[in-house]
Length: 106
Image (cartoon, one colour):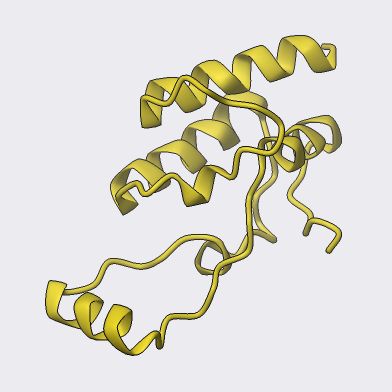
């Protein structure tokens, strides 16, 4: 499969799960202000659709875990939340080409 086809398939998947239309290579799927159920769904579908080995993927480096609303408010007020790494469409395409998860170059 070629990069253009994979990009189109990835955009369709992102739109299906997150209902986002304006997607480019710099779009960070983990910065779309989504809920954890959608994030879990997306990563599961991504793994299955593109047959990706995700054993080395650390979910919590990229996505937040669910929190009680009061804890979430506290963390936002006092900025105690660790900044998550970006998970861009461009990197996801590289993963599709390789067939397994790897950390993006910083």
